[in-house]
Image (tube, rainbow, N blue to C red; front, side, top):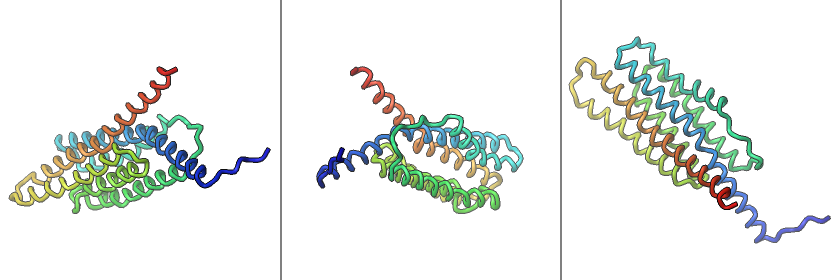
Length: 219
């Protein structure tokens, strides 16, 4: 049986349909990782904030390394359901993007370990920018307005760290000023991750549930 040969127009339509289906699938399945990494980052941030307020030993700062450990563990404990659809070039692009973003965090964490969280420029701002770039780029690739807007909002939010440091820099160097700066930066950091990952993740998951329920109601 001979395979049907597609003309130019049919080939373009087929490719366009495949790309559209892949983008929709990627958007549907991206809610889980965004929620896992978003909630993990916010939880560890609030933990560090509480430890700092309580005046814990400086070694508490090592608890920031719980973010990659818990994130990877939760990703494995709650794996994504395997899709019957084949992986495409867009899948590879998105995965490669987040691999690069993740590797970019390695030197940032090393700086925090060697120089402390008071190192300039703000380590929180650097981490926020890296993750915001990954979020916005993912949104643009899969044509998701939710992630695109969230990523660019996080980029804009990273300016808050600079404004915060500038304001405190105008104040007198009194005792405890570094602790106040650090505490405020942690709260800003946690709030940005809520906007950048947690809220978009819930929106995408809600959309996915509605999409699954609609075919059932129609049948």
